[in-house]
Length: 237
Image (cartoon, rainbow, N blue to C red; front, side):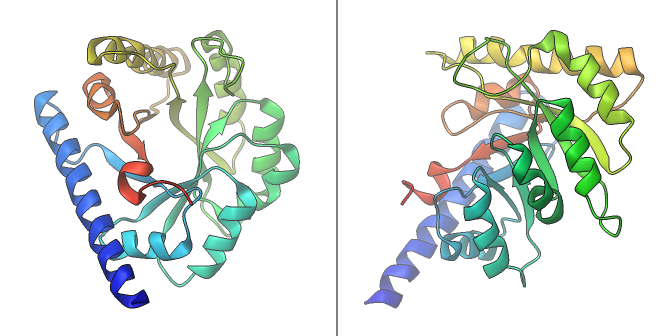
């Protein structure tokens, strides 16, 4: 019975990934953007390693985790697979060492001290850690992230850190009721990215924004990476 249910589960995950990739392609076409410019990041927090492995079998390579201890267990279990791990949750100082050793990307950098610790801890034999600044446009107390006015200072600091590679910006916007409002909410992030690129004479290329219920609006606004969890894996266990 067990193998039968896991087979059924595997099929569901494969179908879900296929469906979301179709939605992404359709949104790219509708927004007149190049096909394949938007990457799917499967958010596997709260999901067992077996489901990550099923998603891998379905062709998925990039996985996002919010909680370090849970992520480390999965990374260890699945270390034989060529997976790219992204840390997307709030970062405490005592977690920076492990994050710097086990992840390829960090989407949620919002403090200079954290950036410096990640840089310090990143092993020399690994490529620089890809980082995004988490921006909090709406000053929401419940969310991490910096006010956009602080972004230039933090970006300037990260550019001085050789073990980090500044890739772009990340956003968790406050929920909007309709697609047009979502689109205008997201549009603030590419505008900020362009401003920073010009002011600092750099070429950040990543906009990490969009989740299950607003990915079309995010892609229309310029997202290059959508973070999808429940729509791939089902409810968290």
